[in-house]
Image (tube, rainbow, N blue to C red):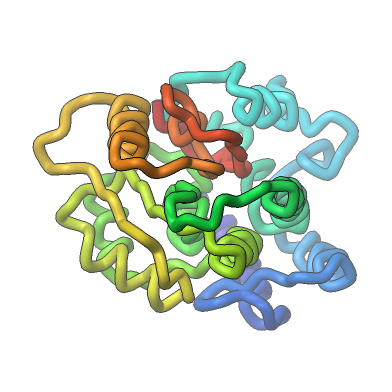
Length: 279
């Protein structure tokens, strides 16, 4: 990415921070439609420099011959799989989606559906009903990191991301926090299940607590020696919950690998994330 484009990206992120009041730390998310619309209008001139006129806000979202809005739909529908990076020609499209109002609106729709489902449940109230949450791009947002790393268009750098994660500074995703608090209020116990390794336990728990995700029944991380897929690890941990007598009433994550694999839970919810793929 050229230096000028990076400057536009940083300016866009800074403008988001300065112009809204409902985010948690570093980057803030608006909670009202009016605020989202106003922010879109304020940020659009900066984001526009990242994309041609037919970018994410145009008729086709087509960049360099690839319809990036269609690519993103394919990712979310799990039709596009096993990809390593966002197509270079779609970096601007993904950046606009993540920093603009579209990502927040999509997240809100998912959580509205999840809360509606919770309201429909006939709970036993025996302390055995749990809801599984992923961490990255589910409870915590790594957008401050990815906004300076190509929104997924550059190859994942394990070392630099670990340095970022150790800071325990990722902001909460406000919509997910709304669901989390709803579950606590009705007696459903949240269980944090993440693909992060055990070595990251302290930083992960610190970050979650700083952002208000407290009161969980357990925080489950991947052992250092585990060699299998994310689906294998997470489905195995969910099976352990069932074997211990718990009922998984819900399961939410940003990756299909968070919600695939038996047992999935009574109902699953997929949050948007076009920045990376975990199989």
